[in-house]
Length: 289
Length: 306
Image (cartoon, rainbow over all chains, first blue to last red):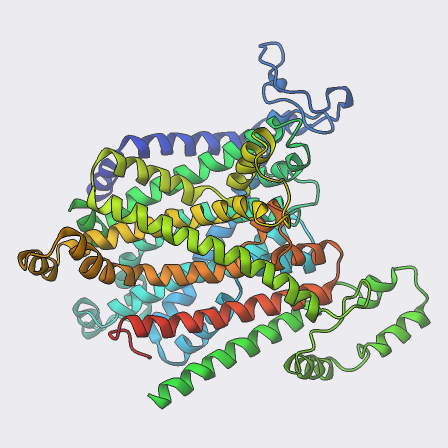
């Protein structure tokens, strides 16, 4: 393994909180993969006599560990399916956003001029909408569904990474090593890919981890409002939305999805925070004081 | 300076204009004719055409766009699709509800953040500080639909101190205020703590101490004033997101604000009302961002108009 990478990993994993967060993250990633490996987990049956039965702790009935929902389906099975959808939406949005955002941000930061003007104006326009308002409006217009939710969240999602990359490129493009590379006859693509991009990777990575947490929350929020998926697919947000009507009688419907969302988002934020402290020298120096 | 102000207002005008254009074309993305949404899919074709003509929707799209913009500039936000009532008075009423909740949460979060931020900075590294830092990371991560639901469950259902729904005067204001305010304070207090710690190492703090000023004087007059600046941007962003982004909190507490109006409109498929809400929310957001820019310059002369 790359020695630098090893050093960073060692420093990040020094904290107990980060180690725990990583374990939680891996746990949810494995859970999210389960339905693909065991198709029988996808078969969520409706069993009306079981309607909103509270959790039972018995080895003979693993499906009842988390109780049953309003049509008598196992909450445990729905949580597993929900992990898959929540992570799928979060990761797709973050990946598309990082790709689009860093491309546009790199172009704007490197060339400046009219390219920068165009990208910045578009960002300014999209930032005029308060958070979640544009996704809500889009969800209203396009209707629900996994793909539409991803599209609605991507629309504003790329701005963050574009800002990070643009700022980094702007501050780096006139530094000595870039001028040296230019003097040696390096092409623009070479300068961007081999000289500038590696320098933006760590802020981009940190941003991406935080924005994964934010996207998972945004999807859960949209689904909570009943505007997210709505095509029969279940995410932790839709489970919470459903639980809202039975808060008085059946709190178990709300507790498990809420705990799942919280555990995933908190651990992502912990990992992002410790990475930031290791990679971002300015933050690290403040922390040392 | 005049040129800077012209550029500033030009940007404001550009963004407002862009938002209106975007919202107009977003409405046209709706599959099917708007007549279907209002009259139902089974309406007669002749009725649909008459309805379209009556609402000016049979004209070419660019003319519709011009109509839309001229109406907006006259302050006419259109009529609801569902019952044909004018939108503007409804929006004003809901806006004041949102404003009430937003201002209360903002003040609450500011007080809490000042308290926790200053305490965390002065006692940096102590056990309480570590506890506060974990707690604030938890609160930053926790969405209001989870904390709000939790508060509702504890205080409205279990302890039965506060009402379950909004609009019952002062008592129904407390839970949403605490929910929104503590979420914001989590971030601001951390920011404030960080910048206070940075400021504590500056020369002018040492000078202030060596002049013989008391701790209280140094912290409030010298440290806080400089440390507040970086937090000011965050505060501004938070205020504008409070006015526009508290959709979920309003929904959890059934607070009759702009956000829950928008959700109602979405659920009723009233596209006129949805787009009016979006335009107003964005306009408020943009204006606030502009005000924050100005305030920031007043506080810190080093930040000039670009």
